[in-house]
Length: 406
Image (cartoon, rainbow, N blue to C red; front, side, top):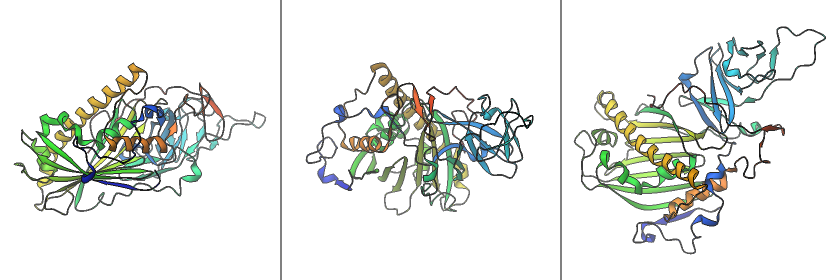
């Protein structure tokens, strides 16, 4: 799909989907999306900025690549391949001295670009040491540390996501960071397919989503829904998040959800309003080489009401609401992943054309996973053209835990 396709409600069938003349059949005969990896040539968050303290180092991963992220004494963040070139001990176990990272084992020191700056005991007649380890392009933005795990020559010409609401005096941001044990594609499908509101009936009551239309392009899918509250008890946090006050209202809201590879956004505009009540940005960063676990990063930018001081008071209620919704979504997508694991492949019978489209966007913009066409079985190829054994990274301490961060 290289040209944008637009589909309106007039094209919808009786089931609430959208008819496409000549549309492909469901993707039973296509490559299994759960065997497609996230393309590394993008900026991915790997840590919250405040979790990388000055003079400290922490472990991170992207799709099985171990990364040591540290902040030098001068305040600059660096990201290195998480292994010492000497004995392969993780550099995330090391010590920050000034702006260099020193391995905890034999005290080899590395600059922020990965080059070795010192081997304390090296004598003139000793063998020639290696040049160092891989250094990743790294940037800080929106309270997150982003790394570029792909071709470093593409980093400078690849833009970070544009989030104009972040830092705006009209919005306050709630930050999320938590592990979800599923392939990242399940997360894209979950947010984009709002027909699953029955799952959240305990917190939002009976919500009736109506797909107004959607647009598909080579790298994106954008859908627009109208939500109408059809009864049942609605959580007070949901009312506050939608800008409706504690009591709520019977108004309908318009929600726009967009997958712009590899990120996802959600915007909500209440009825008879031109202002977003909240804007969500999310990234799902694969952690293990098989990409069956991801770290979900979210920035929920909530509009400040006209009355000063109301939003801080409402913050705990909104937090509890978002925690419960995310917990229910995580329960569902992790169940989908378990089914894939048990069945040995994707046996889904997807009928919603919108989801068929987002699957195609994720499939066509991703890369084959290790063992499924990316490299010979049992090997992975790094960006220097070398081959290294493929392995699942060990479980690193989860500094942030599973609760969202403010």
